[in-house]
Amino acid sequence: MRKVSLVVASVAALLCFAAVALASTNTYKVKGQIASGGSKTKPKAVAVNFDYTIGTDDGNLSNPVQTYKIHFDGLNSNTKSVAGGKYCKASAITAAGNDDACPAKTHVGTGVVNAFVGAAGQPIDPGAKCDLALDIYVGGPSSLALFLHGDPSTTPRCLAPINQAIDAKLKNDSKGGSLTFTVPPGLLHPVAGLDSGITQVTSKIKKVGTAKKALFYSIGCSGSRKVGVTFTAEGGASETVSATAGKC
Image 1 (cartoon, rainbow, N blue to C red):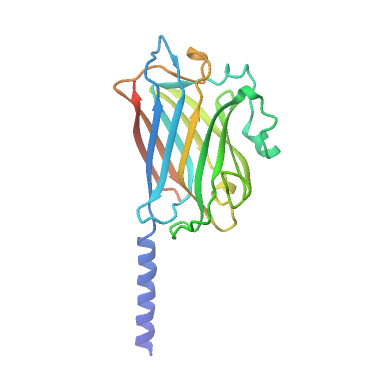
Image 2 (image 1 turned 60 degrees about the vertical axis):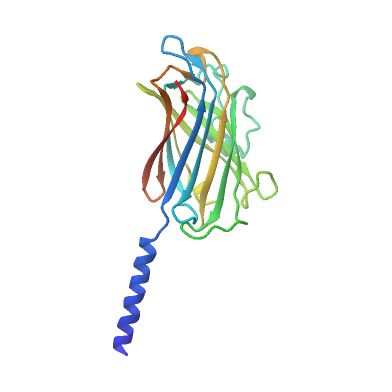
């Protein structure tokens, strides 16, 4: 009996080890489209079309991604002149549960977030969708407000009601500019004890303003314009993926 117990214990331990070893690993793809042209002396206002997809190496539900840092080569940003100094803060949208009070000129983009809810690393339930509309606002002197919303009765449809905005920080650097944001727990886990596994995000930010008074403006780059994203999962795993977003 003792030998049988030891065998059972050993098999159980091996199964647990295998489960850990075979845990799903996120995979990422990035896609961007930004008009060419522009230089430091003659900056050019541009629109930004940006998409990414998240999957896993085994086809199961992806691990929730907590932080995104998106870098655009040869692209700077300036929110101060877009809406005449008016802003629509992410915190205000979340507190109200809607964007009704946002000045019209602060609305600069739209998109869609596609996701499934379940247990990360487990098979996807096709009926457990949480697709959200994305509205993008000028959120502050150096930020955008990403407003995500949807519920069981709307299109796109989410199995849980979501009305929350994320504060996304903008920063210019010597090579271009970046947009960084952290997803709050309520969006990572829209249903208690379950995970949100994003499959695809599409976004379009309008061309607004001119020259250095534009929301996004091209200052030129070398060769092809690169867009790079650092994805940091909730568990801490981080990966950077880049793609070409057009000619400079």
